[in-house]
Image (cartoon, rainbow, N blue to C red):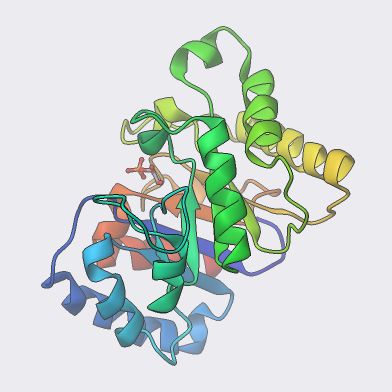
Length: 250
Ligand code: 13P
């Protein structure tokens, strides 16, 4: 881990309902203690829960994010979509963009780029996901894939202070498989170097995501160039999430 605040982003995907608010209370109580002072916890529940989560976490160290936003901003005839402005208006601070589950539903790098520019305009903090498929990994084209995803999705972006990156190998999401620490280190270094060279940004934050859980966290936390984790399945269970946070930060 780097020496900065360590990010734990809980991506709840299409899980959770009103009953989930109870488990949030337990995490809030623990986050209040000084024990976790290096931890930055960000919950990204489904849209249906964002308002409640924002209210519950007011005056705590926990922030709330969305899992996506539309590529058009403001209001308009876009059935089923939510704009960055609408998210911002209810107190959402972060938005995950470019998640592979959204890419597999049709989000191209160009669409992701539009979303990034809009979310940035709304001053939402953006967690941009990049990562390769299993086949791309086997074909050893990971660095090319990462470079293309970064260059296309960050096009025309002028300010990077609201950008966090997440390296999420697609083959690792929800499979229980994780890359070797050396592989993550190499790919994250590559990402950081692109941002440094091309955009002259020194300390961009990069998270790792893909099957992070309470059992493998003691291995993953040894990676010294990452700034935290983007956690799917394990983040829906507060005991597992707290275990992950404690093992990493204490
Ligand atoms: P899992 O932790 O369930 O593998 O999901 C990772 C992910 O997609 C987080 O965005």
